[in-house]
Image 1 (cartoon, rainbow, N blue to C red):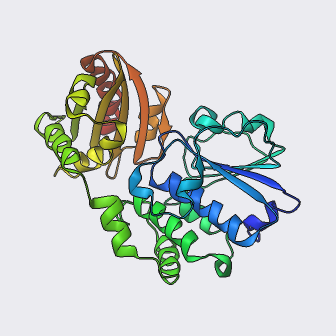
Image 2 (cartoon, rainbow, N blue to C red):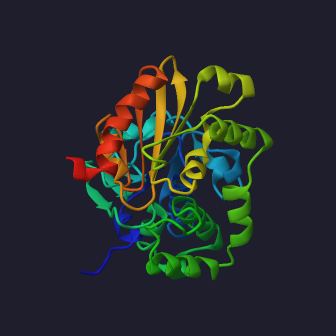
Length: 322
């Protein structure tokens, strides 16, 4: 079956909104601004707005960053709402009311836990990123350098610079096509993925120093309380990348990093290497995500949360005990 392109969904559309999930990561920001640029470049008859929580400043180089709306435009109606990297409605954030208000809804995603109901849903869990997915719906000749930079950045972030198991030959072919648009790939990788502030490196050092190994070194866990975050003067955005670094520990199959967002409320991030489906673990606590990367919000003391998590992680690490 021939795959549609985004332009076919824009026929007769005078107003469109593009939105991503709360606490937007590279794939979310990249796909949203990539689609925003694609529409602006090729469909001038469509008035398009983009809604996101304020992204990290490291993504400011993306064209359209300064056009992001962090609150709804009062009284504006949309013919089409395009949702990107959205695994569930409660993750939409500021644009959530538009799901019912817009005439049509279109969602591109790759979360295995997506159970959304939209006019059109394209969810491909095995693909590397929402950016790779949405790029496959674009006409390559209509992809500008500005659009390509956004899409490439998102692919870099959701593949861990093309190292995660979801990276496929098609992922690399897509990346090559984007590079041919003149994307400054080396600079994007260095400045948005690897480069950290001094305080972010301090947080990583503390997380590593205070981490614990369980189950013969196959699980590593670390956490940070609100008071520690206040001490360093940091926000949730500064926690980015810590759990992935924990997973790099030799012998580790599952990594868990959690930080306190409110009194005894923890944002939990889970990562795995090869065998454990962490999305199934996250679902036990109302969360979700991908097979190798997932998350949830949990309540209790750090020890309560760790005890609850390790119950299911042990089952996943040692299925033969079932």
